[in-house]
Image 1 (cartoon, one colour):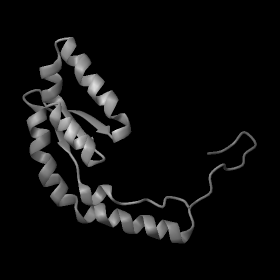
Image 2: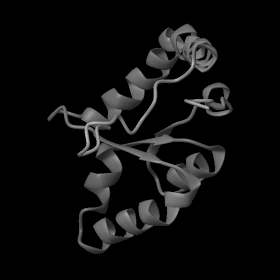
Image 3: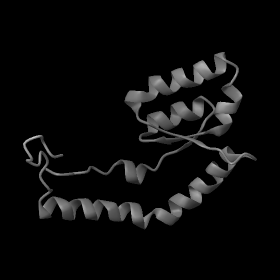
Image 4: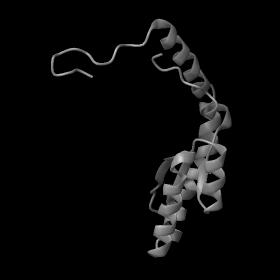
Length: 121
């Protein structure tokens, strides 16, 4: 964040925003084992014998790109391989529905996705 004049372009978050963000992170950490328990079989199914997983993160605004990716892979004869290897981390229920409708494995955690990050304020 340093500018050419040596000044820092970004200021650090205030203590109150840092504490709010820390509290939100606790939600992730509190759910870590449950999340890993859910993700492990999904990742293992994607990994197959070559231990390769293609991880994609997608939100509703990017869903057209996800659909295009799968359609392009299918048109080129790679659809089955891609569908086997891709694990989508959906940021909302809509993308989860789309990914599963495309035949992809997908993970979505509603309790985490509803969090609103104050970031720097």
